Length: 142
Image (cartoon, rainbow, N blue to C red; front, side):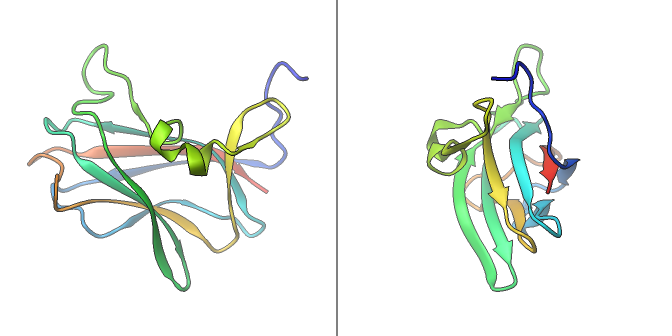
């Protein structure tokens, strides 16, 4: 077993921003390349003083399917000693993101060509007024 991850394609990293307290329209946070993509992490930072609900979805030409909703920890990644919120490693999403592992034991999620991961907030708990959430995704294109 190798001691470090060996990428097989072109590296992919994206950063997205939920700008308003009522970001109910989904934004694209990652896309499947022409041959697909492999996602290794999804992390969220927010300076919201509340714990806003973030909805992760899978979008294609036929519409958006909701993967799940998580309450992102208030001030995650913005306050000293508070880590980024780990969507990918969250135990509630293990049924989606922790099933496949590469030869090094690193979990991944395959994103098919012409599909997109999206994120939005929900009306039940929006980002606090004037705050934002930053979403970071990394992986590789096939």
